[in-house]
Image (cartoon, rainbow, N blue to C red; front, side, top):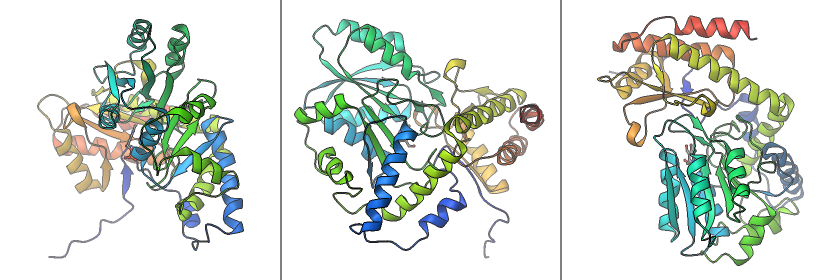
Length: 391
Ligand SMILES: Cc1ncc(COP(=O)(O)O)c(C=O)c1O
């Protein structure tokens, strides 16, 4: 038996990789150019300048042909030395993975934990910093938006905790699922290294990742002793001065990045953030109307780029997702780590509009019914009511 292709467009509503807009696809579709030729240098300079606006920084941003995990490694290896202590805020699955990487690299993590239902515990960070009179902690690492839980940490408050303790540790922040969808201010919040990836708010396919770097992080890089070669900022920053790279860049992804960044700047960052806030609020209203629970239990930490939804005890989130994929051709995010099979995650970030959201929520509501998950109807209606009243 041949399997027919499902009619209509696939709904890719995982919290990244996200849908790539046609304008970006068309840009990637151009012939690859000489990455040492004059046209490339001009493109490189323009992209690197525009990226600063996206990260809200006046300092350098470097681009790796790598997934976000590579940029995590770059952040740690450029600034730290073997045996250094790092304070890791374990807010979910991705923070756990970053912590494991730090251990493998020979760093010594101290941990603050949460119940995976809120952002980083700022009071616990403040206590750890106050207790560290010898300044053994060299970096505080926080995942801004924990993609496994749909909880966003308050980086401004973490900065205040560091300042109040007069602690010199570097502040490193993972914005892989928040950059260009949730307001994020590298300079204003005194972040030393911001880690980001291409495949979420930046509306690109996977394959590029980023470090935004403060002066303090650059000074740390001068004495850091962890081995680094591919990730070394120094040859990268030197080549970037003229728009070039020390090795072959992801040329066609950079064509896409140029287009994506221009789209974001044309929409205006405040509008981009407001759009994501509005879609997140709409989604939570639908979830409540169904009588289901949002994984994030702290309203100040609600994520605007995704919503993780808990399924009632005795029901399987993975079976629900499988039904929705099979019947309605939509992919939703799975539960990770301790949330495996307990939550499904709705991505509402990137190139995403009102009707896509209504379609997404329609697929979830039909899936809940098809799968026999106890719920009340009316989530989609609640979403329509909110969107129509808040155009
Ligand atoms: C918050 C966060 N950090 C890190 C990663 C890992 O990035 P990558 O899979 O691009 O290496 C992800 C991936 O989804 C993420 O969401």
